[in-house]
Image (tube, rainbow, N blue to C red; front, top):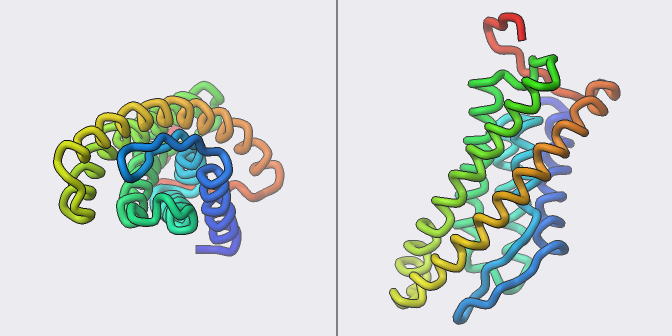
Length: 198
């Protein structure tokens, strides 16, 4: 860990918080709500830049705090922490362990790696968010079965829309930020043990 990593992780936690808290459209569902928002974008960008652990942690902290401070979503903060951490870990694994994205030089390969990693992380969330949410609300929060099912159905739609918009924005942001960070000597290269030509 170094100061740049810590500073960037803190920045992305703050951006995830802002992306949810200030760029959100709430959809009432029974006694609670679900939402369209841009918070997941910054979870994915953080994982692409910093790796899965730091990116996932930044997103989990930022979006859990957003839930806690929102007044509407504080009861699902633990669920949020788990799911956003998983988005980051999956995105980071695909980007850094499979594609070794931080060592790539060709723009086309960087673009491909960022797209596949983003889709992997957010694709997981499209499936996991409604499923985990259903059991969390039913078992932990004591929501009745029918309401929990309706909640899961609506959440599936909002999560899919969020995933599509977040994937597009994350890929664009990563590919725009990367050259700027390299020029500023703030891009963190994660060298694998053996790197061939990329």
